[in-house]
Image 1 (cartoon, helix red, strand yellow):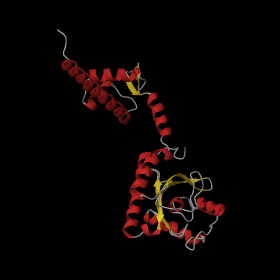
Image 2 (cartoon, rainbow, N blue to C red; image 1 turned 45 degrees about the vertical axis):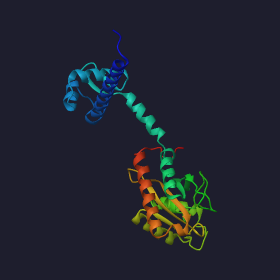
Image 3 (cartoon, rainbow, N blue to C red; image 1 turned 60 degrees about the vertical axis):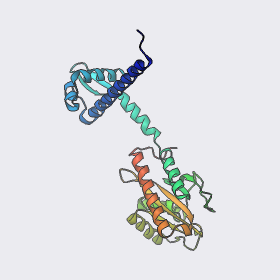
Image 4 (tube, rainbow, N blue to C red; image 1 turned 120 degrees about the vertical axis):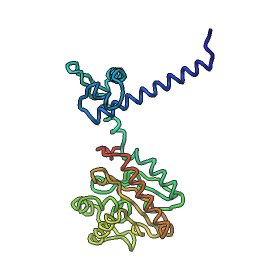
Length: 274
C-alpha cells in the first residue's frame, strides 16, 4: 500500500521537528561547554543539561566530526574545537563600525527626517565615516565621507573630542586650529574645553549655529564596553527644528542610536575598518 501525500507530509514534519530539537540540544551543549569548560566528561554535560548520556554522546560525536569539539582519547574529556575560534574570528572581522551602524543610521534618518552622520576619531582629527543627507536640510559646509569634520564646532565632532584624552584633544586642536565659521564658533581653547566638560556631564553634544548660521546639530558618543569612545552619531538641520520638544526628541534619538550601535558591536578591535 502506497503512503498517502498527507502521511508523507507528516513524516517530513516529524523529521524536521526532530532535527530542530537535536540542533537546539547540540547548541546547548556548546554553550554549556563554553561556560563550564575547559574540559568536561559526557556525564558532567548530561547532568548539567538534564539529558541522557546516550544523547549527549551522539551529539558530541556529530560535533566532533565538524571539528566543533575535540575529544581527548586518553581520558575521554571533551573541549571546544578550534573551528569555533576560526568562526568567531571571522564573525568579529565582519562586524565593523561602518557596516554595523549603517542600518541604525538609516533608521534614525527615517525617524527624524534630517541629515545624519557618523564620526570617528582618526589620525589627527575627527573623520566622517558615514552620512545620510535629507532633502529637507540644506547644508553648505557638507563634510564628505572620509573627510575631517570641523571637530570644534560640529555636534558629532565635539561628541568625539569630549571623550578623548587631554593629550589627543590638544594635538587635534593644534593641528586643525579653531577656525571661526560663525559668531557662535568657539575660537578659544578654554571655551571649547568647558563645552567638552558639559558634554561629558550630560552625555550629548550640541551645535548651536557654530558651523553654519541657521543650522543646529545634536550628537551622542558611541562608547565601547571598555569605556573608550569609538565614534559619535549626529543629527543636523535648521535651527527652528532644534528647539523645545523637537530638540528633546532628537537628543533621545541620538543617545538611543549610539547605545544600539555600541551594544551591537560588542568589544571588537576592528571598529574603524571599512
